[in-house]
Length: 223
Image (tube, rainbow, N blue to C red; front, side, top):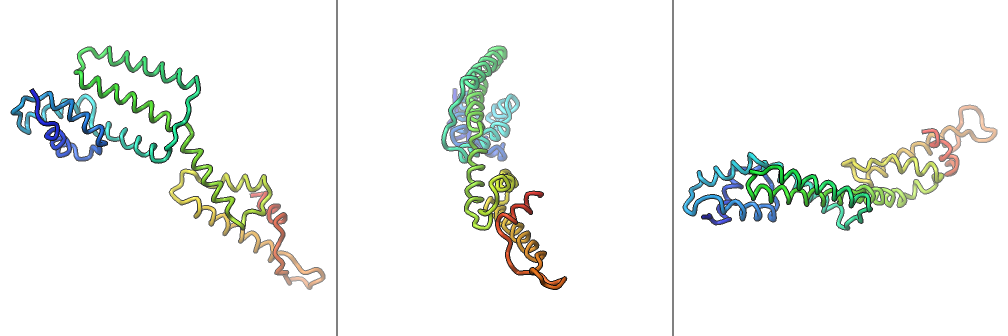
């Protein structure tokens, strides 16, 4: 008793167009669910099987997990080694998940397999989230900051403050954020230069001499 897996895929895509399942996930679901309907099942009969599966675990929720996994994998290609504490925490979490599956009792076999797959996927997501993405962003932000000639003259402690002003989660690129800091720095330099009087010059006259990097650092230190 089975229908072609491709027929399951076609009906699933047609019935749940918002469920952007990965190819691997779609293949696994189609293979499992294709064994449920009769050989001569029509679209209506297949839809019943899909509805039952979706009621137990919504396809769109599964697709969201797939999307998160794809995004994290794209941002963090290198696996992050787990600490002993994290490995133990994962083991405890897995035992709880297995106990929950066992407690379901009457849950269909295909549903248990999906839950087990979700558990494995959750572990992979946790592994990818362990600071790797943030560390990579921080390195890229620092690289963009250090490449700026205009900001090189800042004192180390001030440079650290200004580096911290780069928003790692912003949609604005690090390079554009650094350009914004350069503009602010340039404005401070000009303001300082305009405020300096020539020695012995009459009141109201100003010097065009640019301030030193140390003078600029003293200004921005109070920001």
